[in-house]
Length: 328
Ligand SMILES: Cc1cc2nc3c(=O)[nH]c(=O)nc-3n(C[C@H](O)[C@H](O)[C@H](O)COP(=O)(O)OP(=O)(O)OC[C@H]3O[C@@H](n4cnc5c(N)ncnc54)[C@H](O)[C@@H]3O)c2cc1C
Ligand code: SF4
Image 1 (cartoon, helix red, strand yellow):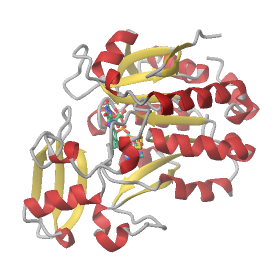
Image 2: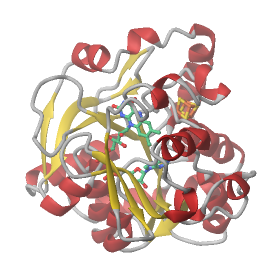
Image 3: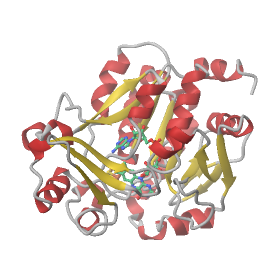
């Protein structure tokens, strides 16, 4: 049994680390250390999961809530069920626009098997709420991988950036919010005429100011959960100022014992490079002292305690059997 700790801004956790994938392609193609995709591809290969719910750009969601009316399809993102390594790799990198990840869950519910779900803290909360009243969803999705999140700008952020750069939305055939390989990289916009625009991450009209300061949905102002405390394992950029690989490193918060077993096994097989960090390093690097909405945080704590007590929600016997059969 692994020890479990609790901190009000982090939630329950068993292990804190910085890590990156040793697979060069997954590493350089990832948002930070490629850890989300390294873990998903490993779980898929080892048949611990049958697929993963991930997000891709350039695909209009079914229920767009008005997004399709205001945006060209190349600017939209939606969730898919990835069942191959290739699909997981194509879904890498952060999408800085609203993603209705939940709409794919109806299709998942019609399936059998085990799936991993990747989402922001608010996506994970929605999944947990569903799992709380629907046992089948708990059994179908026993692994949730959270992304740290301080905010997601609405579509107007991207539209403003394009307007500022005199780019018409209709001319965009592909948009990658976080391409370019190294560290934060660039936004890369491919245009119909073959031109490619590269926008450094910290440009004034990107995360340097506009994306950070404006275009923030109300829900983000009220959000108490930066580190996806209801997930089984969560990932962010490494801002600790230590151990950074030139191609990027992920910060990892492990909450579920099975997840620790799996990533330890990946380290042993030299698939990832991982180093433990302290709680203090995590808290100061992610500026968690700023997330001070105490009341919602208390509700989050009650929720995570409920999840831990009611292990059946996301700890189905099927998954135990699959992991134990690997003799880790
Ligand atoms: C909106 C947003 C805000 C973030 N804010 C922070 C922050 O404040 N601090 C911090 O340290 N890290 C933040 N991150 C997390 C960070 O950018 C990386 O996503 C994380 O470190 C994982 O990197 P990776 O290389 O391991 O993942 P990769 O291998 O690149 O895989 C990323 C996975 O996340 C999925 N994904 C990407 N965008 C979304 C989305 N919008 N909704 C649902 N799933 C998505 C992809 O489909 C893919 O499966 C944020 C990410 C997003 C999307
Ligand atoms: S800040 Fe909170 S509400 Fe906003 S996108 Fe991130 S997880 Fe969701």
